[in-house]
Picture 1: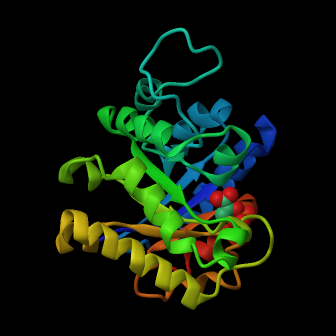
Picture 2 (picture 1 turned 180 degrees about the vertical axis):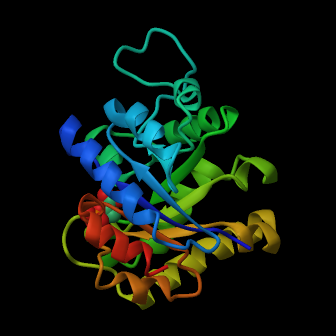
Length: 252
Ligand code: PEP
């Protein structure tokens, strides 16, 4: 049975002391929650990964990075490698987020290299895909997501693919307060699962966790997560507010 996941993407937010407080608030709140076949992942800025993995040792969450460079080491000033993440007990890494595609021109091909680097080091990619508004308005959203998934993931064999988590994040819903409707989320998630089924078979497709991301909050999470192909969420803004983040987790 596939795992449900709520992952919090803190983006470029929080000072060190604020991050420490938020981590401990979430860790304490998770002590009172029974997670059934579900995982919580916290993705703080890279500077706080070590602090997060220290807190996670005694807590019921995993730590994810927000970015990685595909090489294990070398002359890549400013970058962080998959090997370093593994070394720091980071279990997940977000890749393909629309902000990285937009501001850092990350291509499907480059993301394919990141996927390979992470999997080689046993760090699970949370692979983001999703269309921008003009693409949806032109009826191209399925084609766009298909291309993103195929070009960055479908070179993988069945076993490595099984370690990948997918996050469908319609770009028009990220940070805008406009959420995809439950029908829009479900039809895209079902479409992605169908693509996976055609490539890797029904069992792999059925076991793949597909998250929804885009203005998911304490109020709409339960409705979105109740859809049969929505296996949790990748949460931006609301993951910075411990009470609301917990409300989302308990909506699983
Ligand atoms: C995100 O950045 O992945 C995200 C979903 O952001 P928000 O929840 O703020 O829309």
